[in-house]
Each structure stands twice: as C-alpha cells, then as structure tokens.
Length: 403
Image (cartoon, rainbow, N blue to C red; front, side, top):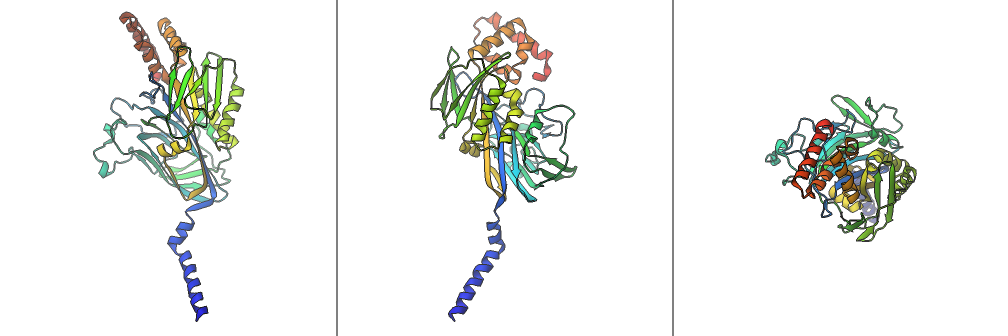
C-alpha cells in the first residue's frame, strides 16, 4: 500500500510538471538567449540647470529612407519635449533559431521612428476606444496621456543567416550599429521579410533627466545628481573648431565641480575612453565601438556637453522593456547627453550672429535655436536684440533644412 501511494504521488508530480501551465512557467526564461541594448537620452540644460523644452525633431532626418516613422501625423505646435531618445538598438545573441516578442513602453513619451516594421506603435496605430479622447492629431507630450509604446510580436532570431540587410544609397551612421556579432533577426510583413542586426527605435519625451547643472562665468560646471542611484561615470567634453578636450570622472560625488577641459585632446584617446566606459557597464567590445562610431559626429561636434552613464534603474523606470521568452541576461547601457550653453558657446554664437557667419552657426545644428535664444534673452538693447533676431531668421531662411 505504501509503495502504491508513493507511486501515485510521484506520478502526480510528473504530470503536474508536464502540464501546459508548468511548461510555460519553466520555459519563461530562455537559457540560450542574451539581450544587449544601448541608446542615448539627449537634452539641453537651461539657465536653471534643468532640461528645457525644445523641438528635437527639427531639421532633416539623419536616418536611412527604409526606417519607418510617423509620416503624415501632425502635432499641435510641433513636438516639444525635454528629451530626444536616440537610436536605442536592441541586440540578441543565441545559437538556436527562436522567436521572441518585445514590448517597450516610454514614460511621458512617444515612439517616433523604428525598424523593422512593428506590430503596434501607440499612439501612431489606431487609437484604442478607451483612449478615444486622445486623438493622434491633438497629441501633445505636455498633456496627460497614456505612455507611448512599441511592440514587435514575432521577431525571428536566425543564427548564421546570410540575409542581406537593407541599404540606403547614402552613407549613414545608422549602419555602424551592425558591426557586431549579434544574431541576425527578421520580421515578416505584408511587404515581405525585413532583416536587420537589431531592433531599432527612437522617441521624444518630457521626463525629467537625472542630472542638473550650473555653469559659472569661468565655464566650470557644477553637476548635481537628482536620482536615487549613483551615476557610474561622466565625461565633460568641449570642442572649438578643430581643437577638443575632455575630462572624465568615475563614480562622481554629488554635487561635483568640473573645470573646463584643456583643448589638447584627440579623437583616438577619446574613443578609447568612451569604449572603456561602455564596456565597464556590460556592453561587449564590438557593441561599445559600434555605439561610439554611431555617435562620433554628433557627440563630439562644436560646443560643450556632459555625457554620463544613466543608472540602469532609471532606464528601466523610464523605458520598461519586456522580452518573451525572457533572456537569461539583459544588459541596457544608456548615455545621457546634456548640451551645455556655456559662456564660450554663447560668445561664439553671438559673434557669428553679429557677423552673419553662417558656417559657424551651422556647426551647432539642431541646438542653434535654443542657444541663440539664450544669447538674445541676455541682450538689453532693443535694437541689438532685433539685429540678432533678424540675423538668425536670415540664416534659417537660407538653410531651411535646419529649421
């Protein structure tokens, strides 16, 4: 009798383990799957040190033509935001063919570009009935609304695939992100199969960045951490023409005082420093190099900025990521970029406006307007203010792609 009871008990345990529910629970994590992601949060520091609102979608697109975006959707007064979430790319690594689903939510934000084709992008997709009072044409990040999100329901991971990835006719920094050993992936769409080395998306949001800065008259920067988690590392960068310099602080205290770097650096030392910072946070060497090459021209253009590693917990709170089945390991490394309107930058832009030096003004790209506004606001002479405004308008009229 005892033997029979034990047998029945053992059989019940085996059957329970083989039940669909138990099987799903056991297979919720894929031990053969790893996911790595990197991206950038770009903001502009205002006079009070906090990120200001700006129009991050101004200017011509810097992405290949095959990347999907919200074409045809208009926003009241443009799409004002405090943060431009730039080029998060999500890599997968596995030695087995498998299919995953991915969901990303974006706090106080909107997904604006993506590739491959997504299963659903909210609110660009048909608005759900329960959110009918938030029509897309009236969408504004400053009003209360559900968080933006993007879904890929069926992403096929294909190790050793030799599928060709899409290519634009022009050179583009987008392609640098492919220079890794990540597993190729594909998404089946009504227009055919789309293949890539990663999932790509971008967006705009109004969330408060975790750092605030104060800039002194001598150009020194006081940095305060506003989050509950330590900033792993930060780099203060400055470029004036062909001269550049940078200063690195590991595990910075809060607040931290950073003096302007001497402009005696070079791009090779800068690359090694940035790659080391990214690898220390968990990226593979080729991923870190791909991230640097993707943002080489943008991160290190004219002006001053603070680059910092965003705490992982902050990333997860702003950009919750769900992958099913769950990878055995998920690494997420985001760099915060805080553009600084230093006395040197203001002086350079002011002189360029006075002399109508279009070449110098163009170096500041999409950040020119908020910098110029800061210059104009400090002008106490009405006639001079008008002169500066006219010079800026003339510049944009001649270069509509920057407006």
